[in-house]
Image 1 (cartoon, rainbow, N blue to C red):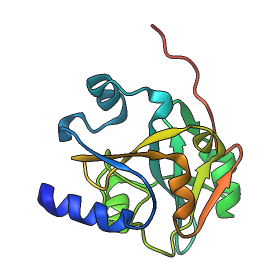
Image 2: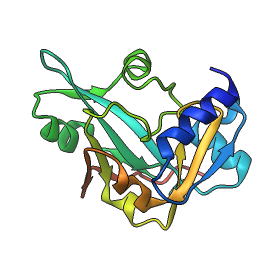
Image 3: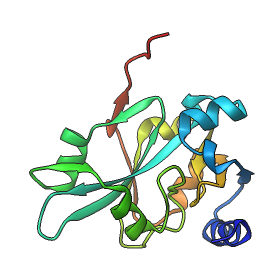
Image 4: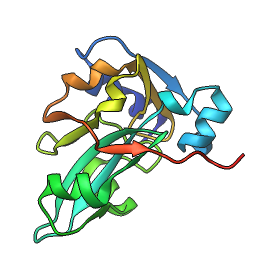
Length: 168
């Protein structure tokens, strides 16, 4: 897709969902830590959309939105919600095939309507969040409440846990 086509798809997915701002970024800086450092956003306001897979036949998928300062609890919270014996992060190939988004640009907007969307409760406590924009060239800045406008969304307490502090 071109930058204009990526933007058009993102705007279509955001239509009628309330206030938001689109933020263009260098695709080489789309990964969360690099993006925040380069553009002056706090990790505590950055929310990542992560595709997870339950190991079953057929596989079971869900999208999870968690703050960059937190770690998704795949081995307990996610696995239990999926109802499978094992769960893991979906591969980049699975993510692209199911969402149409590349890692570093995965967004909660425009996901398949039958895909569950679980949002860690800590995300909802942020006044504004920065989310992927469906490609590595765009981010969405919006009030966290915009996520509540999406289909199949559930806010989940304890879906993720605060990450240990990084060494300075």
